[in-house]
Image (cartoon, rainbow, N blue to C red):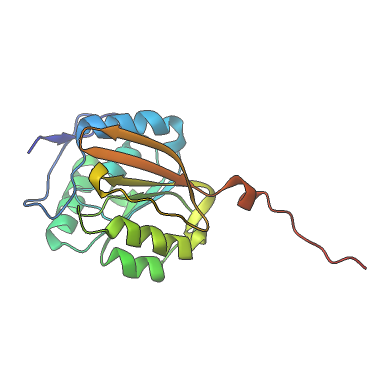
Amino acid sequence: MATLRVVSGSAKGKRLKTVPGDSTRPITDQVKEALFNILADEVQDISILDLFGGTGAVGIEALSRGSAEVIFLDTSHQAIKVIKTNLETTGFTQKAKVIRGDAFQYLQNPSKFGFDLIYVAPPQYKDMWEKAMRLLDAKPELLDDDGQIIVQINPIEWSDQSYMHFVEFDRRKYGDTELIFFEKPYEELEAPDVEAED
């Protein structure tokens, strides 16, 4: 497996540990760099929910580039241990909360609302991204009105879905990794308050 590093920011060049086995969906440094080139300054001072933390590489990259806080979730004891080690290595322990738990249960009973970015990169080929999106759609207040959801999957996992509260606004493919970007639709955000007439 290729070595993971922090690509840019205050922890640039720090090496990150990886999770043994195939229980996580690692992101390559190339894809990670492309992702953060897209996000650019949008990562400054934001709150992030990383639903399937894995190595913590995405959230740690965001912290390195100026994000305010990241909540990492993972069910794997090994993944949680790796995330904590990587946070210590990069010096971001105080800006992160690491929860060992089921992402789907968390989405039904979250500890926080109004995230600026929600990252969804579950283990491959299990339709887990679709389940996560449906649960997010049932609790749109999890995402700030100006926020975005990013789904990381293998392109062959994609199937057309429609949501009440989110629309796809961008999609990028890098080899066997595809990033799909969702936001709240403009018309939902701009809906005027209807007042009863006298």
